[in-house]
Length: 464
Image (cartoon, rainbow, N blue to C red; front, side):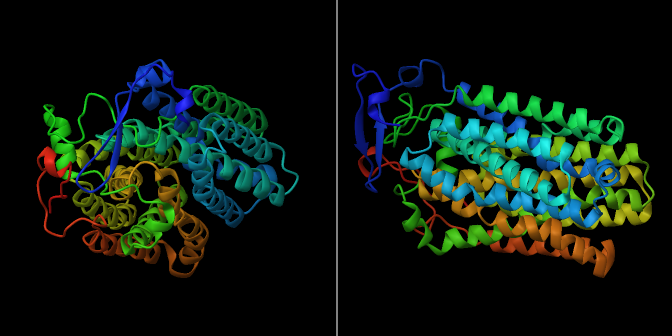
């Protein structure tokens, strides 16, 4: 977006803090797009709802797809792995195109809507599994990646002073939006209606994404809300606490500059581990529950609860991270995610349905919470101006985690059974918590400080 997108009579000024970071202030959200900025939480949230079923409900359709197309379980899990691969692969190039202005947000969303419907059409009518890999795995994955990258980073641009809760709310739509489709695929879809069901779901999701994307608009580079002075302590205690626990980046890092910092690659690896655990749970909870003797309705309920808690947990954890710091919250989430894998295994082995449902929800909470944390943390550490490409680089770790969590997960289950696979996943989660302890914003002193006076700028440190 350029300054020509804003009426010329709207005044603005640029101020610089003690670190040399520039803030563009004076233009309101209504000046820029003619409506309040909360709409840029609502529409991205809708967009995320539209792509959620492709990942979180897909394995619920495993039995019907197997019977209809004679695809084996390995193909089903690798289809999901390929989808995740392309969904993550597009994040960095999409971010670079977005930040350069060559791919407007609205165009990215329209392409995402097209990819979504192509994915469902290929699942309905694919003459062989390779067409499904192309249509669902690649086209739908790329479409979802465009929508995901555009929606998540849009919120951080419009709420640079308090992005955690808003980012989490939008990110949550990527999970709980799939809940009704889990029941639809598990309890209603069969050989007599699968083509109609898949086509209708594709059209509905495509429409939701396209309608939401029509209203997307970026703020100018370095934009800061006019009611929050970046060089003074705010009168709003929520903003004061959020900026003290998660202070703005010391400067606006380009992607090349961010890539030179060790912390970005530590974040990349931490997300690789935790996202892999999350995808493993999504792919194998349904078949594990069935193998443990739970009825199909119970398994569908567990998966739906997992999706709902996965989504709502993203919003809750974003709000918590605004209050207590992004890194501290991430450590807790990694501990929860790792421990939950042992709980799911134990509950299935015991045959305890209530415990299985509970552990499934806890696993969903931990698996969902990691994504808004990393999205907001990337902006906290490296700035908002290039966050689409910077977070795209961090998020690219899902290229590997998708294949590991789903495809390689099937290999591990085949070699070590569910017990070995869940123990390995839980152990990786606990190790991720240790890694998260060492994440610190680049360029900021190791000793934590407090938000300083205007003369030295809006600088703070994250509390331990």
